[in-house]
Image (cartoon, rainbow, N blue to C red):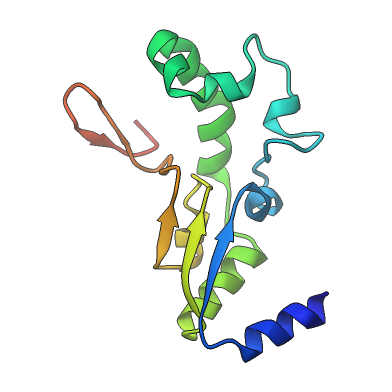
Length: 139
């Protein structure tokens, strides 16, 4: 399998990488559906409900508690892993055109990738819905 992937990459003129939670698990960020994932941890509300916009609107304090404890806490301490660095290297060589990610951790950019399309936003960029002021992850 590794040789097949290497061959595909070496024969390609341009690639786009589409990834999700599995890319960042080696950096210590849990995924959602594995045995240790967020969906298998015990909470008063199911995580998939707590991550919804409706939950955010109706139970804002609970949403932020979960966001700080289970999302933000992992993302701010994580470092890019070999996969993030390899993708950045492929971009630098002109082989990889862009990374499309479902991740919100900013690790692709931290590894050096420049063309990153974040489908779900980033914990590194937050804003107030009342005043539209932006805040980083430390706010």
